[in-house]
Length: 417
Ligand code: GLV
Ligand code: MN
Ligand code: MN
Image (tube, rainbow, N blue to C red; front, top):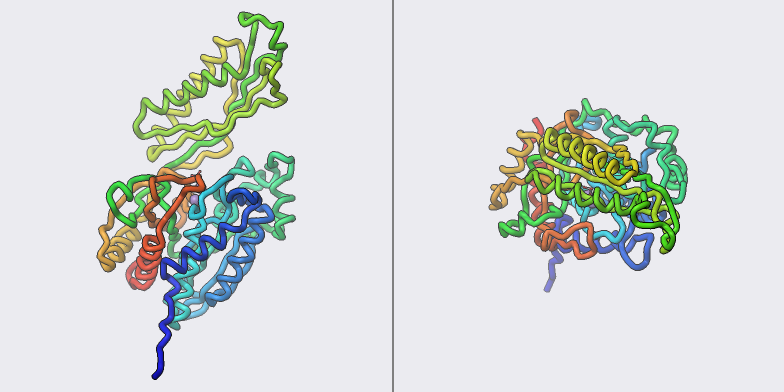
């Protein structure tokens, strides 16, 4: 009696879950998943991705911005390409799916094509971007910006909390920052940018849908507010004479929240507050805090930033301190390509799935390609809408469904015409 062993498809959801777990073991912090850009664990993750890409039949290289790029050649070598990408850097104490899911899904669809012996009329380049989160350095999306040809050289001088420059971090990573301009790819020869990503929000779960089609990615303004008062002795300085930078910052942070709440289309977050040289017995003389403002409407976002700056100035004046906001990142909203949204809808229908459309509140690497090449994204249901949190979760079944739809999208001959 003979037994047939069936091949497990590369786009099987359980196979994707195994890889999610393998990548999640690579962390700079043994207690949680923290894989900041260009860190030692990022290097290990990049090596693992190189291996997986090679096994899937791709030619692989590391570029000068720390991106891993795997190319699966077209039927005719040298033909135009479709990029499928996401990022493998994470925030601190991160979830396992943010970014990583898009990279392993891209590898999986190529693996499946390779195992079926199929080549397409276009090449596929799967990219694991190096820096989407913008946590280690002030500037962000540097990996995808380098590939899109819009990397600003000044970002090489950004320094992390330990004073290490991005230039040095790239060298330590094994990349050559002096060649960063060479990382730009030929976008004339690029048909589309595609990304699968966990939703990071509650919409799909609320509608009991595993997948959605992204219509637009919200724009964002990020930067730092520096509040300067005067340091003093906490025991001797009367309350009436204080120029306390921290209480001023506290009032400013509440004003930021109140401004964002007045506009349904705007969110604003202060995610990091720092009192340099702070101590229990010092009235704070200096406070720095981050500011992140987002909206699907660039007009609404810019208006909110202007109002926030006016509120900061008013509070600073009343409290006899100074406040200065410096933006380090200002990215307009990205509208996803209508033809790709249409092709995705067909792939959803082919799989019996409702082509539910939704916007993205989170930022994504696709923003770097805004206005340059057609961008399309598929979202995967996120349990409880929880993200940037170790509890982040997407089920194997939902991940497998996303990979299947992506696979069928690639086979749709009209999708990237
Ligand atoms: C990235 O996750 C961002 O939206 O900040
Ligand atoms: Mn992400
Ligand atoms: Mn993220």
